[in-house]
Each structure stands twice: as structure tokens, then as C-alpha cells.
Image 1 (cartoon, rainbow, N blue to C red):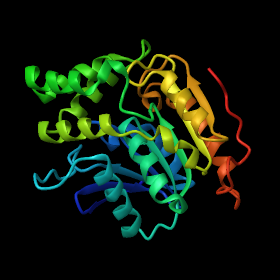
Image 2: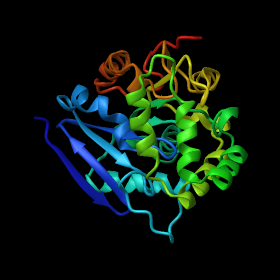
Image 3: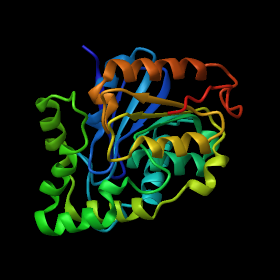
Image 4: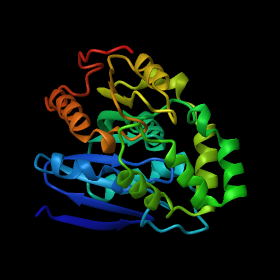
Length: 276
């Protein structure tokens, strides 16, 4: 049985398995480290898989006196690096976690060996989940039902009911004050003018049925980051790593294979970009 360890680093609960080069997974808005459950066994035989529960999300603490913003989450990831004495790592971010990963890479480029952006955007979220709609839904329905309604729209047609219910139970853990601050910060975040400054090998992945962060947003990311590789996964919505795990894991493994050489920090790494 695969051994997993749990650490609390500041306000961040981190789950670790495997050994090897660090592979860090960061979840999205109101989701949790459990959204990477299909990647644990697939990558722990070769990598030290580090799954972060951002503060205020999942099982992590949610003190009222701290910030729940993109810059604050960047600092939280930096603390994880320091706690584990990580010089550089492969950083994988989903949705809001992709925004955090972009800003971490821009702030600490030598600490990111390669970057993977899943269902991400360079600015906010898609039109279906804009900040005004989210805040109004929290006011009208309460944060649990508002978050679960987003989950209902997040999966592609092939997702089974059990998977959707799992996701709904996970997002119910994020309190309203965390969700409010996080969505406002996400909406204000904009990396479009700085994408050309990301020089590390980058993989951009999106489901072809994603309405939360539509594929066009991933195209913008891929076009803005020189030499990046774009992969669109069929029959998947906003969570391709859960909806189509075998396809997602194969794509990620292929990308990581190209990053295992000593020259992974050279610009572009010769990766091909696949257009929509």
C-alpha cells in the first residue's frame, strides 16, 4: 500500500507520497488536494508527490486574521518549498491553482523546473463564474450550495454521478469568508502582460467541455508562453485529471519525460504547441 504522510506548514496542510524529484500539485478555488487523487499512484513511483491544501480549503486551517489572496497563496507555496528544502520543483496548478502557479513562477523562476496549467486562465475565470455571479450566489444561497452549483456545471458529459458528488462534498469545506476573498483576488489577477516572461517548459491542459475556464483561455496561455505545449482532452470538463485520468496522466508523463534532462530551464525546451 502506498504510504502517505501529512504535514502542516503554517496554514497549509500538505500530503506527501513517493520519492524522487518534487512534483507539486495545487488545487483550485474551493477545491482540495483530493482533486489530485488519481495522480498519486501514477506518479509516486518516480516523483515525490506533494499535494497542497491551500489555506482555508479542504482540511487546512482557516484563521480569520490572514489573507486568502493569490499573493498570499504564492507565499504559502514558498513556505512549502522552504519546509521541504526544495530548490526547484515541477509545479502543477488547477484553475485558481494555475493562477497561483503562474505568479509563483514569475516571482521565483529558478524554483520552477517546469510548469503545468490545468483548466487555467491568465485572468480571472470564464464568464460563467465571474466574481459578481459568485458573490451574489454566496449571498443568496450560502457558500456551500453556491460552490456545489458551480461543481454541477464543471464536469463534462461523461462524468458519473459518484464523481460529481465527491467533488460537491469536497468544496463544502471552504467557508464563505475564504471564498469571497479568494474569488475577488482571482478576478483581479492578470498575468497576460507577463506571460512572455515565463521561460520554463510549460504544459497547458484543458477539457474540451470546460465552461468554467473555456479552452480559448488555455489557447491564450499557450500562445503567450513561448514554446509551451497545449493539450485539449476530449470528453472532459473543468477537471480532466479526474474525468479522464488515464489520458491526463499519459499526457503529463510524456511532458515530464521531456523535463527530466539537465537543460529543463532553457527557454521553450523545443516543445511543440498544439493549436485548437
